[in-house]
Amino acid sequence: MSTTSSPTESLDATSAVRSPDLEPAPYVPPPSEAPRKTILPLKLMDPFRWLRRGASDLMAHPGIALFYGIAFTTMALVLGAVFRNSPEYTMTIASGCLLVGPFLAMGLYEVSRRREAGIPPALGASIVCWDRHIPSMAMLVLVLIVLELLWGRASLVVFAVFFNTGMPSTTGVVQAVFNPQNLEFVFAYAVVGGGFAVLVFALTVVSIPMILDRDTDAISAAITSIEVFLKNTGVMVLWGALLTGLLAVAMALPWHLGLLLVGPWLGHATWHAYRGAVQWPLDESPVNPVENPAASP
Image 1 (cartoon, rainbow, N blue to C red):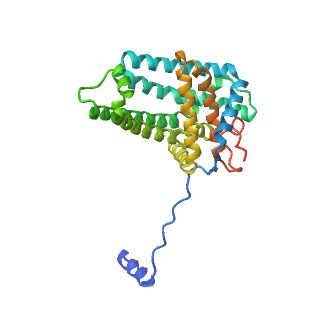
Image 2 (cartoon, rainbow, N blue to C red):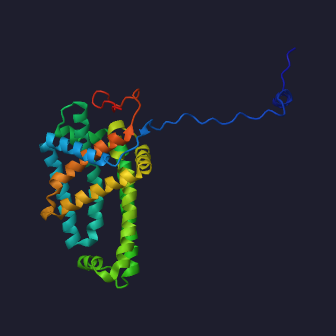
Image 3 (cartoon, one colour):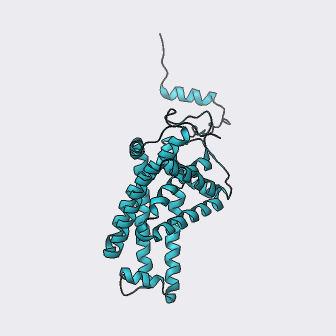
């Protein structure tokens, strides 16, 4: 006649066999699923090398560059016109530019990527290159819009602190900025705006090219971008200063016509900045090895 032991008796037997000094095995986390990459050390001359390579891409395909240059110039003209005539809608138009701008930039990255890979670039392919990366791009653009809204709120707080008579008009803002008596306001506004600008720059300096190249998620791309900024802070500050200076000169020309050249030029150069700052293992191929060859060391 067979006998069966109760669950309580089985637990007692197991406890009796187990040594009282035996500790549970330590937790071993699963392997990281983050993209494997190496953040390369950069030199101060690297940004100038990226600009030179970007200029080479632009001159190789001037027709494509002109299309994107017209798009950037149109965005700047619309934003400027709204700021002058209806400043209350400036943030709305700026949000629209943040929606469109990254997708336009990705088109320029696609041209540089194809040219680097020996594949003939095409305007149509560059315009729709983002369609395989919509989830990642949507998340990144959403983060940028949230940061832009936060910057707008912070700017309103600065205005409220220094102007107790209400929000000044567009002319009043310009006069306040260039008035020597408002140096404290200018300093506070520059600190707030500069802080958000540095954060946006750190998040995006290589994230969009990385999404195009590796089809990675927005979080991994943004983290990689921040790593590049933190590990090469001096070079990245120089790179940001060059971008800002060239854009300022381009927009200072009548009708912002400088953006016809500078906009595509900096777009191509940004691709080479990503390629120069992030290296991938040789045994790890991109999503589509035919159209997206692995980076050379």
